[in-house]
Image (tube, rainbow, N blue to C red):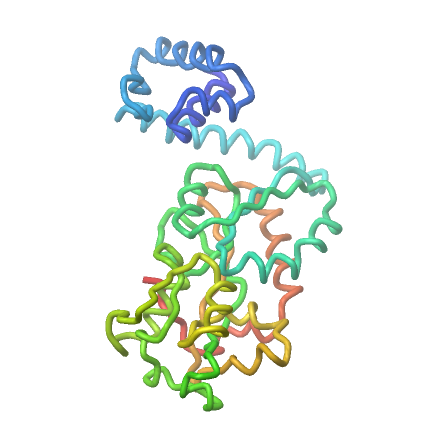
Length: 311
């Protein structure tokens, strides 16, 4: 059994399709299929049920896939050890980042990171938290940047910073006249929310708690973009929440919609996450260092306010 064959097994398990797996491995489908059949013949087991669409991994196949993933991770560690010995910083780093962080955090550090480490090729994907965790567990990305804690035993969390929630009110909203907002004053019925699947939505709902009732407005709109919600608030009514990084570049006009919570302010913890079997720790340490050195220093304070749960 070869390393290439193990890579083919993981590709089919990931993509649930021989055609897409072959494409991801840059080989023809007959070549990939033949190699997998060789493995199945060698082990005298059926790893994939080809009668199912999408392709289904058998029970024994799942155990083989899990072991193959460990074997490939250990193999990749050999290259990492050599690079570490030579003090080389190079290779590919695949990053997943959630949409409520991506447009505000990436511009703060990404250019400097690439200038500092020109031999590192970055592949960055914007995705929801559950997708990032799935891809991390299946070795489709190397590291995630999202909100924690996750309470996932297969994941290592590396906290980066603590970001305050702020409120963005329409000028017609009565609370817009106040300097600071108490959580008990908010009615969730007035709130514009991100759609299901965003951890920022879950935290927003948790902040408001039981204040208010089910949305009874004539217009109900849930978006995947904070910027869309912000513009709706400006033109319509109600309010939405904004993460602190999203407000750093606000001009004077935008700040008239923005209000802070009274103490203790709700905050979210932002972390790097990696799989427990991940090997490229040197690159991860450098990524953390670059992020932390390029964000406002006050965000590093763990005791800024009250941490809001994701669920």
